[in-house]
Image (cartoon, rainbow, N blue to C red; front, side, top):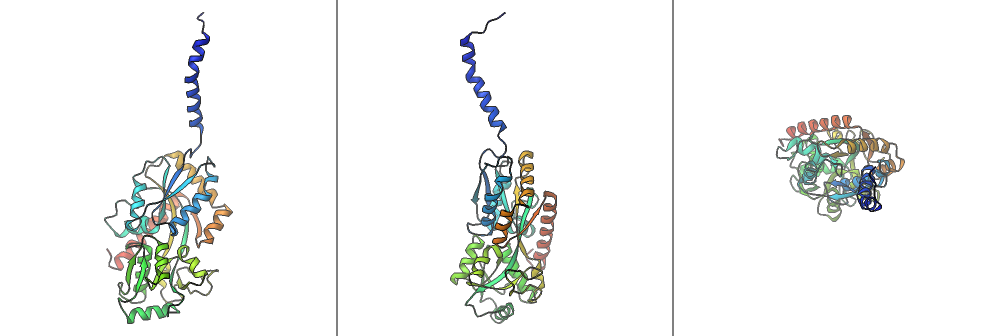
Length: 331
């Protein structure tokens, strides 16, 4: 019988230790390192806020609740820069996208130069929808939407509005309002900014006279009395804005089709381990009181959908904005 010396056993121990460490690493559930969540608009805006709320509450529902999510703002080209970055990322589950209506539906719908297809991602789930509101500063002379529309009709091309660039909901929502009111789509001058938060700041500072934006970006300034909301895109009046008329009540019913939303996307062909983990996590998030409260607090309406329903929702949004773009002469 061959004898194994003590020296042989000791020599083998480092290698065995290496196998043990490798096994331990392999056994660590997803995510075993920080996940980068790309927000395609600037810090302080709706996409950034939604991303940070998700980063704060989602980890406890992942296989490794000790995992972390790091929000990274990659801005530019109406959200296309950050969105394309994720489209080209390694599909290992460590680079994800906080998908926004503007960059994930409107751009692919109306701009043929968009460097990605609307369905060129792994859709993990819809998170929430966000009502659209048209606002002016509290000291503005227009008390109602009708008064603002009258001013635009009397002074065509003289009033300006803050946007996040062409082919974004901030821009298209206002042009939809113009069309619904019988105004030319260039009745106001668009001033682009890198994100919804910056657009609101421009309105507050007097750089712009009005804005169409989601409630996450505008809610704080409305609540503080700095902004006056003239109309909201919901079918019914919002409990926290009971004095603000709906689009139908304000005479611009077509605006009711406009609302923002947030979703979670991954690169195409996302690895199954990561995909399954996130689908399960989002289902749990839909029942998470803390995430629900945080989302509602910033004006969002929690609307978690599974991947198949999310894909159908986004497809319908692309169709809606492609048709809108054609009606407005943008395509």
